[in-house]
Image 1 (tube, rainbow, N blue to C red):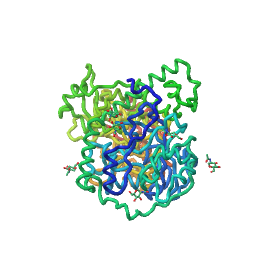
Image 2 (cartoon, helix red, strand yellow; image 1 turned 90 degrees about the horizontal axis):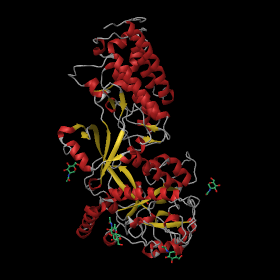
Image 3 (tube, protein in one colour; image 1 turned 180 degrees about the vertical axis):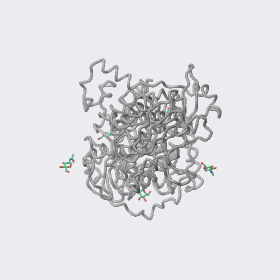
Image 4 (cartoon, protein in one colour; image 1 turned 120 degrees about the horizontal axis):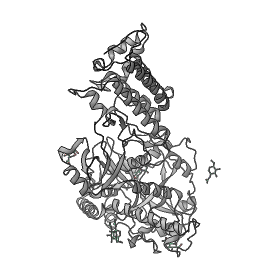
Length: 637
Ligand SMILES: *[C@@H]1O[C@H](CO)[C@@H](O)[C@H](O)[C@H]1NC(C)=O
Ligand SMILES: *[C@@H]1O[C@H](CO)[C@@H](O)[C@H](O)[C@H]1NC(C)=O
Ligand SMILES: *[C@@H]1O[C@H](CO)[C@@H](O)[C@H](O)[C@H]1NC(C)=O
Ligand SMILES: *[C@@H]1O[C@H](CO)[C@@H](O)[C@H](O)[C@H]1NC(C)=O
Ligand SMILES: *[C@@H]1O[C@H](CO)[C@@H](O)[C@H](O)[C@H]1NC(C)=O
Ligand SMILES: *[C@@H]1O[C@H](CO)[C@@H](O)[C@H](O)[C@H]1NC(C)=O
């Protein structure tokens, strides 16, 4: 624990020796990342990266750039002195705010990126991320992936280089900057309001800096000054030959050996970073509590001066966003149980076939209780962040988690929901019991309540993004709970670059513009209503269920109810319980409203829940009395 205690050792920038040697042997130049082993106590901190919009032409708005780096559009706009809706021009410099952390002796901000067709580590690093990272280090931080054999859709961590300032030189933050052809230390220093000497002390001699590698720029203002010079991407100089494909293959034998050796070495010592990060955070949290008790809160930024004040003051030299991150994480630690992998192995019989529920979800018995254990990549972090905010009877509850650093795996432990998914209840053939209408109506209402909760009562708002019948689970009383927040993302109007979601449920505007709003969940909810009424799948044999709705409502002869009857699940008519056709027609009207092409015309989940609860009352009245009232077609039994 003592090596977390802050010291006043000045930070030495030590390069990764092996990698530097190797990259000199092979063009193009690459940055090697920054070694943070000499003073881990200054991490994490607020840092920035200067990113030029438009290197990838699809990333010409703040929301896309924010999504790429996993930061909010607003924080990006604020750091770059823009408004959230400002248009961008190609080459426009943006300051991306990062939380810089030290993991296995490398300091970086991890960004999760989903591989698309044609992507290589090199292309994504140099094009999408504007050379703020470099492919050899991407290999190092993703030891479980084979860079020459990437599958589309796999999530890769791209380490955006960064560094935390020491107290000594009085800079408040460090900006990572990709050195461009034509840049000089003098020009950069004047743009960022710093001096050449500070640049040399962090980066070595100017002559040793190669174009397109990163340099560190210390700044004494937060946010740093916004530079205005747009740089139009340069054609590659003749000296640097970009490799045609990724890394290991592109180098000569010697380099390959070095990289592989390094990857192995770092892999062995390295992957404990998750544990050390969590450890660091725990220690941090304790210290903060302790310090709060000591009533030292009045210490402020810049208070430290020479840094001689020791640990106590050091702790306060954090920006508010760091404090927020700490608060978020410490909340998980308070609220959830942290399981050991051995416990999970025992609970699931070593993740045996027999305990597999579905996909990567296993059933496990611990302390006499049954849990659902979901195995994920470490980007489960997003899910944790969201679940810690939501707590509602119609949402599946997260009980705890476990991190297995060697495998880059994270396990989420959920309450176990006995009756499985709505999808299997509706669509599994050979199921003896079908859901009756009353049960389906209850499920529709439960689901509406769960969604209403995440849309209205969380801040920032949560959009689930993957509502479908297989993400709706039924408990022992056949009450519905929404599961699988893996794709959920905070923030209402974020535009995403990756298409997620499930065919047949995805709202049209999302496919066209990538627009994410709560109305996207409303659309998917409308599809689930259709499944409840029709008993059909959202997509079967290429037919998309929601496309059939307009045909049913087309006012040919006014006999909408007849058409709905013909279309609905025959199992409903065979039930013991009597049911009201009015109620079915009502639900179909709600579904139709939810499926409007124009998201603005769709009702909110509040409206839906209200209307449905009315329908539910109506229905229970009729059914209890055995009364059947309908304007035209009446269905009994
Ligand atoms: C932010 O931009 C506005 C104009 O858009 C300018 O007046 C102001 O000085 C800028 N602030 C900083 C800190 O650069
Ligand atoms: C980090 O570097 C220190 C030496 O400064 C070394 O003792 C330690 O083992 C390294 N840790 C990792 C995870 O590389
Ligand atoms: C960082 O430097 C230390 C020596 O100070 C070394 O032990 C460690 O392996 C280096 N870490 C990395 C990731 O190269
Ligand atoms: C990144 O560096 C490569 C050379 O390694 C260069 O060709 C490319 O243009 C750079 N990308 C950007 C966005 O500057
Ligand atoms: C590439 O990956 C696929 C699936 O991930 C695997 O089946 C295949 O064996 C791999 N090929 C090589 C050469 O590693
Ligand atoms: C701090 O600045 C002085 C001169 O301004 C320089 O000699 C020294 O190396 C710097 N230290 C660090 C850690 O940057």
